[in-house]
Length: 394
Ligand SMILES: Cc1cc2nc3c(=O)[nH]c(=O)nc-3n(C[C@H](O)[C@H](O)[C@H](O)COP(=O)(O)OP(=O)(O)OC[C@H]3O[C@@H](n4cnc5c(N)ncnc54)[C@H](O)[C@@H]3O)c2cc1C
Image (cartoon, rainbow, N blue to C red):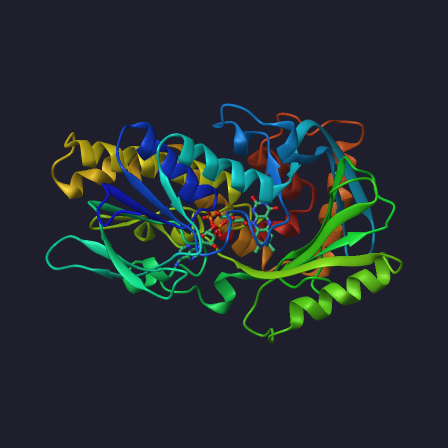
């Protein structure tokens, strides 16, 4: 590790590794810091991605894929269910391998990857940030200078917070999530299943995502001011006792999933925040891997343009990042944040209604090419009382 780079990226998740890859590919020096002993470890993710979310990658290697998803099933509070077919819907990844490969791609392009290294305080002697303190495994802290810093250190981003870019979300602005790898269960390996309802998962849902035909990631994300610490784990245990009583629990993980908090969390001076650190996420489902990849890509390219001198005034950077990323994803970020606001108000009766309506709607039809707006209109036409939620969506 040197004491000076063109860019320092803090965090080697999908967002940070992608940004580092773009900067190194453009021929600039970049340091990629990871606080754990290797990227992709420990796992705190249900590992689901749509095909579209990973479309920006030049390839999807077989070793990154645990299962291929072709159907989605929604189970309402009264256990009524609907299963929808969708050709090539997505994958359940092997995320440790996936994350590791993305970091290796950055390294192969020329990035210096340093693990067991924590990016901490940034110094800002004048208008721009000049260096970041790096705590090494040896216990030594060394400053590293750069022209651009990328905060890719996840939902609790210390870098974004200490720089004054984002605060930790309020309790009702995050999902508290808990997940187990459950083995020795009978499961269809191409169906992802969601269980909804206020009692089962207030403000969120339970997911069962198959890792094989005998194992799954089973987890819960919940939200709300009224919840207490430990509720996610208690509710997940209750779910497992009811639905998978014979399952053998393997690895366990807990974590927070952020929600989109507006456009002000992406750049401050010469720090670009990406992925969860920027709250770049689908606030409705909690899917963040695709946003991590695309925000990382655009931030990396913008950083390279600034380092090369193509952009001289830091303020102009906005047109590239977050500008280009917003061109692709801002409407979607906003739509899903609004859908979440409506979702938080659903009663169990509303959930049951929605499952019944979708069951009639999809009877024998595939979900290919169905637009979320079309579905919302259909739901409201069929049950006009759902109209009361429309003001949260508009
Ligand atoms: C339980 C759970 C289930 C989820 N399931 C899904 C899902 O199925 N599909 C989906 O798309 N999304 C899912 N998500 C969300 C998804 O995991 C994140 O949106 C995604 O990982 C964001 O990528 P990132 O690179 O921004 O951050 P991260 O993947 O969190 O990576 C951040 C990296 O930075 C490192 N780091 C942190 N601080 C420092 C520091 N100070 N110095 C150096 N390194 C640091 C961390 O160790 C980590 O490697 C889930 C989240 C949770 C909690």
